[in-house]
Image (cartoon, rainbow, N blue to C red; front, side):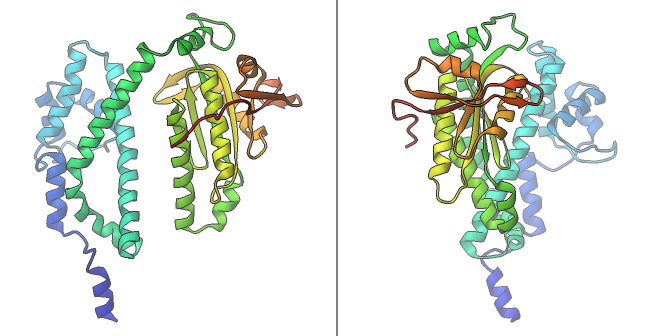
Length: 359
């Protein structure tokens, strides 16, 4: 029995202390030799300012005697401080940008490690615990490749953001100028956007009956399909929360196409349950990678009112789509919606045309 267990573990031996130490040195750019005051002094900044930046990055608190930093930490701190000194950005903006990097990379790393663990379990047939002990040994051969793809993706995404800001299509510019109520630059909220939600039906009850592997497959499939459709439709996936996705895009037409495609894709998928989808055209505030405002809240409320497999919009959004033959608009009964009073929901259905094509 002992020999069998040892043999089963042979393909995935746990990482040794030496391997872990070598991997840390590679990732951190050397051994930990510096204390926090030394790093702050080396970057020419007060410890208080340094701690603000480290907190924004998501680092834990450390004591004065903890030898926890490397020269690369000092270099990175100096880069952020230099942006403020050269007045490229204010300190407040630098903290916000740094926080965005810390939060996004933290989520990315967790995602990637889970993907590696799942792959090792599937490939070698070992337990989740054995895969987690061994994943450290797999990382050294991936670091350079993942880092290059990360930088490539960042630059592509930044370019896409520039395009949205500066060289959008005329339809998008006109839609943004009009907004929801004809308001222009003096509107209380700056951005006119189509905001949509897609929510899996009966997710809570389904998740109680599923084992870990099946639930992971459902969530992954849902997020993958949503991400592909939103991307093809020219939108942005703002965030996912379990059984729900939030997206936005620059025109009501794009929002309608994405919404219909999401509802249709879930209805056609044999593994996933149907989805309730909503979309509202209005103004939003974009902060910390998320979006806020009454438009987002109304879209969330409409999702709860939608029937499985359907898309609900409000009457103002319907008015923006009324002349487009690609959509059919079916008024629904007036509903009392918390925080908004009487709302006139409208069922959005497919009219002429194929809609989005996800190849």
